Structure formats: structure tokens, C-alpha cells
Amino acid sequence: MHDTAQDRIGLVGALTRLLAIAASVAIALSACQPAAGPPRTITLQTLNDSGVRGTVSFRDVGGRTQVEVHVEPGGHPDMPAHVHPGTCDDLTPQPKFPLENVRNGVSVTVVPASIDELFAGGLAVNIHKSNDDLKTYTACVDIQ
Image (cartoon, rainbow, N blue to C red; front, side):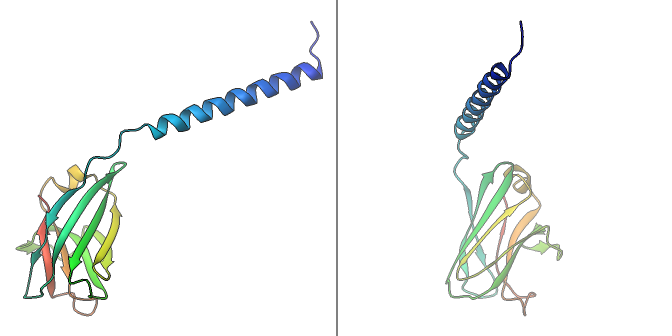
């Protein structure tokens, strides 16, 4: 049996088709992964007569967590938000996870922790009045 150039071209074509089929199957299977469950949502507590109220939702995104803050009134232009160690009554000043600032009522951030880690206790979401006034807290909620 002699190996000809035409035989090798046919073999390369067959392997290429096989790889294309395998890639298509892998893509199809990845699309069949179970969808993440519904978000876990907790209600913010208004602090310092700020009038700020709203919710924080946590959604699994592949072992990390999307943290979504919604507040009213939504007209606040830029309020820093963080996940802090501690509780709303006794926050550790250094944030564990910075969140995107709340702008016009919304902040969406993916943090490098699972929902289970965040809800294990000892963490709180805190919203500050502004970048210029970080010491005034407008809303907070213990993650539990």
C-alpha cells in the first residue's frame, strides 16, 4: 500500500470535518447548561434620614456573583457602594468588595465570590452619600 498525496488530502479533510462536528457538539452542550436560579434579593435599610431605599440582588454567574443595587430616589448622581466585612451596626471600614458606584439609581458589579460565600454571614452592602462624603452612609443591609 502506497500513501499518495490524494490520500493524505482526503484524511486531512475527514479530520477537519470531525473536528468541526466535535466543536459544534461542545457548543451545543454548553448551551444546555442549567440556567442560574432566580436572584436572591434583600431590602436596604435607609440610614441618616437620607430617604434612600431599595434592594440588592445577587445572581450566580459561574461561581462568581453579580450584585445589582437599585435605589430610589434615582436622581443621586454618584454614590459609592461596597460589600464590607461586619454588619450595618458595626462595619469594618475597609471594603471586602468594591461595587460600581450607584448612578441614577443603579449599580451592577460582578464580584469574585459565590453567593454562598456572600451569604455565609459577616458581610453587609453599604452605600455612601458621595465620593466627597464617604463617612455619611445613606443605606445598608446585612447580607443574610
